[in-house]
Length: 327
Ligand SMILES: *Cc1c(COP(=O)(O)O)cnc(C)c1O
Image 1 (cartoon, rainbow, N blue to C red):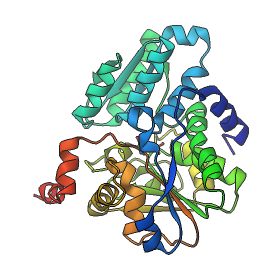
Image 2: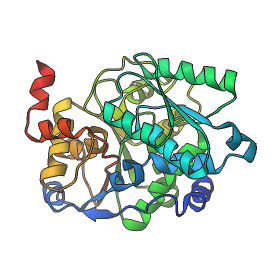
Image 3: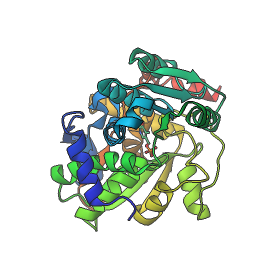
Image 4: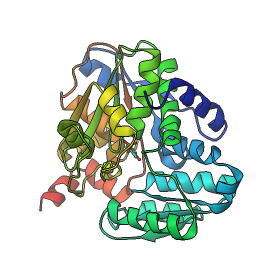
């Protein structure tokens, strides 16, 4: 394995006191529906509203003093940028965040308020990445990518360690899947402790880059499309070094959801669990509700983030947003 349990345990020590240990609670309605205990890992309550603070805090804490003095830069669909801005501010170092125009306004504002230098470049993550490469080459900033980096994966893996302490008898863990940093880290931690626990990745059908890459046997590009799960958008990088191999080796299955199924997840989280989650944070619930997951014992569903535009959330809960998109 490319990121080991030892690496993940070291990350946990490094980020202690900088991130929350989030609750993992049983869901009565989902347990009844599944016929087995279903637990929700409430990671959307993490500081900055998503798990990305784990990886960002670990990667920044692992920099040497010389690297810290140069500052950090990343391309981000929002939550990684926000996490990096937060962690950089705590350390008193400079952060530049590059994003595509697809990133929602609410996420942009949050990052600006944390004092980061935000740059909007082009229509895709790949365009934003070109600006990152320029800043690394010309200004000497240190790139901390959203997923394909050992310290980022190890930081996200701390979530898996918590899950195994909170639900030691879990037979499956459902993980929202985009670039695969979260899935690789969680799978690395969980499989080291409990090799038979299944790890199921959940993506949106509209632009599922990791699924397409796993099917092709190598990283491939897919068209980036607007989706309710905007935090799952973007490619895995044609030169992916780490997360593709880890996901290929460790994931037991990948499930794809329609926009309606993601919306149903957001609605269920709100009405039955009293939780506000963004699209990416709702996909595990959506997959279970859609009957796409075979449940054979206690399951843990990761609710990965809550940074949704509240106007959009209101329209989804009222059942409007899907019709609007189809029009
Ligand atoms: C980034 C993100 C994901 C996906 O994580 P990857 O490591 O890219 O697979 C899932 N949910 C939320 C809320 C995110 O911000």
